[in-house]
Length: 151
Image (cartoon, rainbow, N blue to C red; front, top):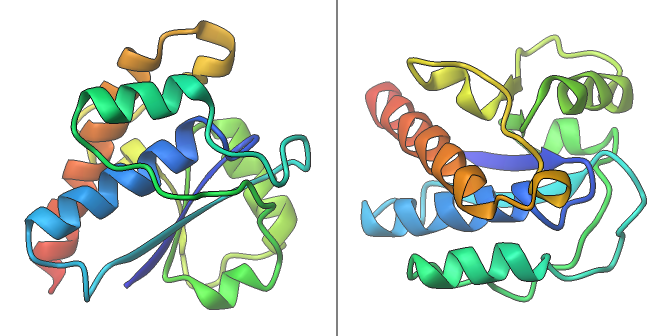
């Protein structure tokens, strides 16, 4: 299963979700079966590393943050990934604008699998990386549970 996490700039929420899901998959012994990447809907931060707040919160929770560089989602990514996961309604709108069509139903919000579907707030604006981490963790756990049920 190839998954791409997507947010506006690819320096806060989507790399956080990428590394959280990788970490959870590794703990579950599923690293070989679940590959995770991340991308942006915009070009604002292309080439930048994850925000220091993202790196800090991941480190505080014992999750390694690799040598990620922000990149923009492309139309061709639709064929490369099994799931394209946005962090909020605006991301989903922009993802659909970029990929143009979703005939295979690949585009979802990260918290679609939770008991409380909602947007994940952008800590770039809120400054609250812990709340974002908690929401990302919830989304990644429930997504991983769903993937295990389907396997």
